[in-house]
Length: 311
Image 1 (cartoon, one colour):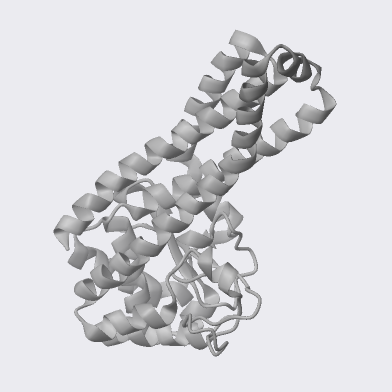
Image 2 (cartoon, rainbow, N blue to C red):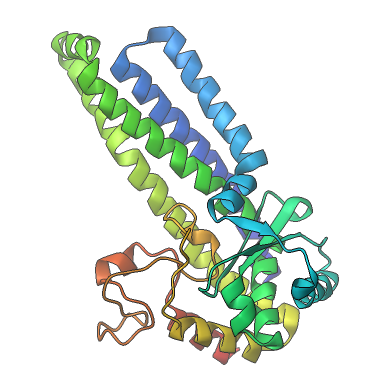
């Protein structure tokens, strides 16, 4: 387990470098197609560095604002605070900032750049649906994301994917409205044509590459957080019961998006005709086609429950 966590931290650093490189590549492609020259190259590099800096320090605020999370203040959230404090003591973690999302769908997520600057958010639906041991299992899962440093890469991915998609969209739009310089370059010879095609292809593919990296990041880390969470509580049935309730619930989080989906304990998005267990019979908990499952941010709940039962 500890070896897996160490590998996880190394992969996190590599993934962050990948996202920065992808932002820089998209910015350079944008610059080449619009023909801004050397000044554009400098601007592209500065933009990539600024996005990396902003993602590292402020992406948790973006994620919380996008989910419309509010600080968990008031006596009605005392049980929530007590459970987090107890688990943080057991895990050797500082207590994260606690938030609540006013939504009937049961779900939760953690965000932040490290354990000292972490935040935990749960929906009102989760607080109402789960009993004490089930809520403890969910919170332990989310605190495991904090301890394993999953929150850094998943939170940065939210703003990185958004920045890449914005660059791609702006680049493709400006190509048609101000593409004279691009056409001159394409007419200048074979090399110019190849570079234009490559830049064009990069702007189209970059958002999909970033999303695929997001999905790959989340699936594996969810399983590790499940295992780490039950090690923390020493009571696998608590998280198992919570996941079974999540599986049977049909509600979706109203303010969740594809960009933030990988942060939640289970997919907060509505899917088309579904089969959460992946056997094609449509008897799963949430609805979605096989294609949606292929691009899902989480492993099937049935698979996660079975692994925990084996523990």
